[in-house]
Image (cartoon, rainbow, N blue to C red):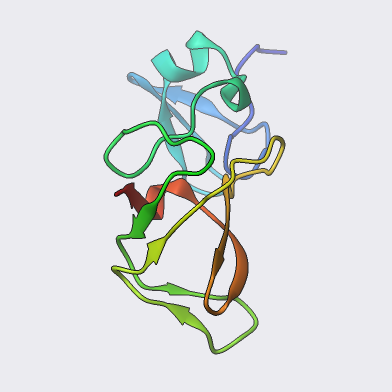
Length: 115
């Protein structure tokens, strides 16, 4: 068997190399081979916002996109300021735990920027 990494998005192992990228035929996700070879332990790295700035517990962030909350009619609006975020360990792909006026949520760091 080959030693190609599993897809980081769907975790299936049907990946193949295509130029400088790995490609998953199941979900269509592509990622650079250089990132995969640096180490697949992303959990140890810093959590970064949409602009690439590292985030830390207690930071204040601003949403850069309207986010619909699954299973409800709540929409977190673009420009909403969120204070006192937390970065829990082992949270999966939703790296940021925060509280807003609408309640507590786990959000992806790619949809926020550091204030």
